[in-house]
Length: 530
Image (tube, rainbow, N blue to C red; front, side, top):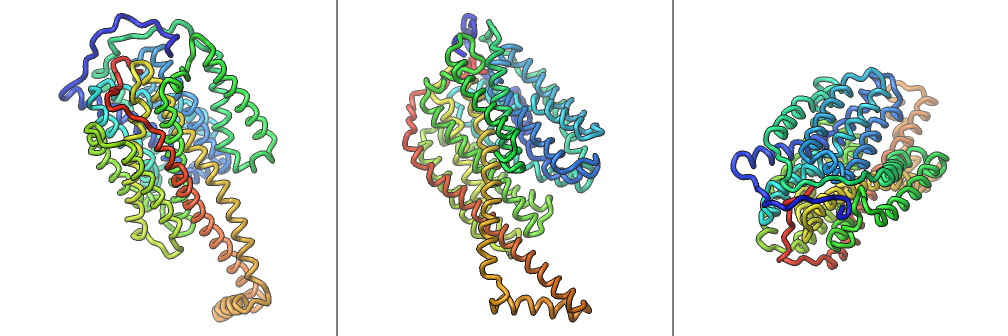
């Protein structure tokens, strides 16, 4: 926001050391993980919430949708709001808002109360990612930027993975309300630590004018887009009139937002930073792709193993957990390696290639696969995400200074969130289409004159007959069994196609790495970042 802020006389920035540095680092990572865990922790509790509150599954899905919409609206505004309220105040206030909303979510007595408080929780949570990242960069010296990025990336990967595991455990052993109550002690401790140890930057920025038009256009555009992505597949996309209307609102609002922000003297989101940093623009595209692959694959995998292979929610989380731990373990060494001059292009090439291999390997699984079959495959995921997240996060802020850092982190986090939403929506639609295609293909081989079909149906009828079922009922039950087999096989093949589709997307995007230009003399100045 180069034209929005009146800047005081610069003072030397004080970088933290010792135990204070450790406490601030833990605080901001915990705050970021709270936000990320809550993007997925509720998913495993949908059925329980539906039964407890007497709501349909479609209504309960608004618990997930409302949080996502609030998140994606607030994230790009975090730099502006941090300037408006003061970064420290905004960070503490967001944690407290998130914590209070969590309490109210757990106390909700009907579905629409829960949806409303979940939206409020998303407003508080949306600030935590970019603001935590900016505070972390301010805490570490510029030459330690790789270490800071490695630490932050641990939270980025661990959060969405821990969510289903923690949610499954809480639902199995307590109740769905504890998916929200668990945030309260952690949130209060994080707020106290932030109040005690986090300082306001030496260089303060006073907002001269609030860009209400920009905020309104962004809220309408991004909110509508997120709504379309969350609900479009369920409503058969443009066959539903209100999906079409929300699409028109999203397109008009976002185009108007971009034009307005580039022409106003006091933009809420300074989009010109994309023009000043080619690397940020490339990082935004890569971050979108990473979000697409991360959330898309994380959406398909639990559905596949739970619906077709019979995994419980807790077992699914346990299977995913080692890969997230591996990412956490390698994040800091990779960040230090980047500080010492290792090429980010090399790391990202390894990471994206490994992610391709991971998705392709998942696409080769069978209906006989068990937990042990996924161990090494998922370790590839953990390895690849470490090699991708660290360099792309650093790339977004390379060569930027001061306030531009805050704009870059906000934009980059928003793009990752949107990438995840696109990934889930497109992957879900693709699966639905492939299920239909595979079903039609399988049915061409199942006819009353096909010897294999006759033999299979006859064997099933005989098995039912031996158990005492009447011949007419045995035939009907045999046909239902065949229908179940066709449906199961269709979904299995569709899930495998989805994994291969994500692998292909990553492979096609590898040439983008050729456009990265990193000047090793550039050190991002974090002293006045928001």
